[in-house]
View 1 (tube, one colour):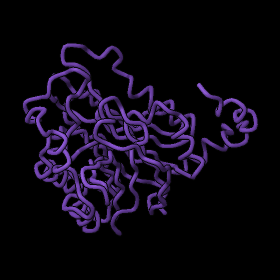
View 2: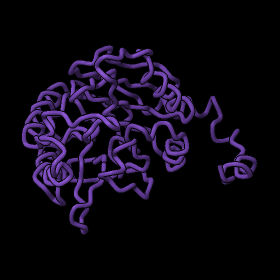
View 3: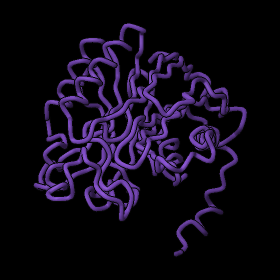
Length: 295
């Protein structure tokens, strides 16, 4: 396992229900980043299908979605089947260029027809190394995706990697569970948006969130958001890479398509945790009295 890892976050605009187009753009990005020496390349949430419609409760479906009639079925058709061409192509690229990829994909359920999962896929030169299904579904995602049921960390040549998706970041227990399983790198992939007519009140919101989860757990936090527009909303970009001590290693200040890169040193995880004492100072005996209490 190497101590230093070159990371690239691809902040791109996924086209609605156009998996072939999105795959070609992702292939081009991987080939380009491979030339820079990238070892881990991260793509946003639902990169194959675009975000679910309508984007907000009560809003109209966007023209690109084709309207409300049979939308759920069209989303299922665009979602990636088991061993489908999208994942197969990413596996081929990872193997050919000896790199790792994290990609947000809408997946078809392996057994139940018409059922889907919002997933983050970790791919390496050996193939698919791990699949995380989003546990905390935002608003209308509940209409299309069933909730994930497991939290795990994947051991890779780049170090132990844990995955989460967008809204998951608001539940600190998830990142802590990944840290306790040994995660040193945590990827959070987003499709976070705002209404086009409502400016973002805090342009550092994604940095604040990543900083908090990084320093709480002593992990490298890789936050990759989507860019572009869909319907009445604009995706907020501003992807960021934060070190265990909270140092911002790279960030985008834009809502446009962008790539941010950083070299992370996994030895910084041990440096930070051994100084701060996150393991030695925890009081699980006390917390357990309250964390299982009903709301």
